[in-house]
Image (cartoon, rainbow, N blue to C red; front, top):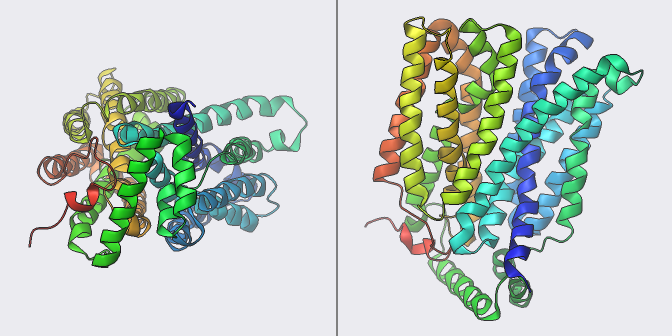
Length: 451
């Protein structure tokens, strides 16, 4: 049996939750102007359409924290996939603005559930020496989903003038409907995905866990892993481990800080407001949109670096290298805006450097670390807290970035992101511990707080 191929299939299939995550969050950028015109939306209604997805994500995160430990990881992932499918159909055939918002919220619930359960499942299933690479599949899928949304939006817009179809006559419907295709593929691939062995042990189904491990590991390695899982469960049960336990306290701080500072580096602001940034730099609107596609492509390709090196050089090395590049590029971008030297190619080059550094460091590594540092007994609850912190940070950046651009200008906005990235670098060097090659069970004692 090819154990490696089987494990890769499982982790790849589950990582597709990230593709739907990325697609759902990016597709609105191409559809919003058409929806605004068709339903005569004012700024409040437009903001509600965009933020309804975020509200759904928050609901999805909470839902996952409640149900995943009860019904299992696989069933939770399937529910998220169904939410994506319902959202695609619901948005595509929405007959009113209210139904469209409801469908967007359903998609947001799927995004929130996927953001918790997909990388967590992968971390529980992947072998220790390949866990970083396999969890990075999830971030790669997010970047590909964003890129897919850009290209599908452009293709539908191009075809919309040459068809009598209602979906193409109203391009935004087709833009949303495209998500049904990867959603159906996701559901199909999940058929052959087993339940997480670690969850099965948690609910006293050791025999089922053993049988699954035998399909993805050689028998001696499977028996040892099962023994380690059972011993770790016995320790945490005896110690009554909770989110306030010393063995969880430091990892929880690390997870929350990394999640928040990932967003405070400004990545979503640059991806979503890229055209506005380039237009404020003096580029025309068609070039600005082209640059956003370039940014999406570079983001996708650079994430492959994390897949190649997260397990070879370690998480801290990628964080240190990437954050250094992020800080330098943000400072120099701010300097270009401050001195009004934004007309040349240098601004684009610096933004590409920023995207590259983000894509191989805090983008995927944050997800990797969050999903590997907690004991199985509290993993869902702890990852839910960290993911909620990330979504709150997403909301804060989305709310205040336009205000910062208007009130203090792009130069000081970039420098603010640089300051947060510097804090992240210092935190990563001094507090974050290297987790490369450690089993999830070894994490139980790796972060015990000093007494």
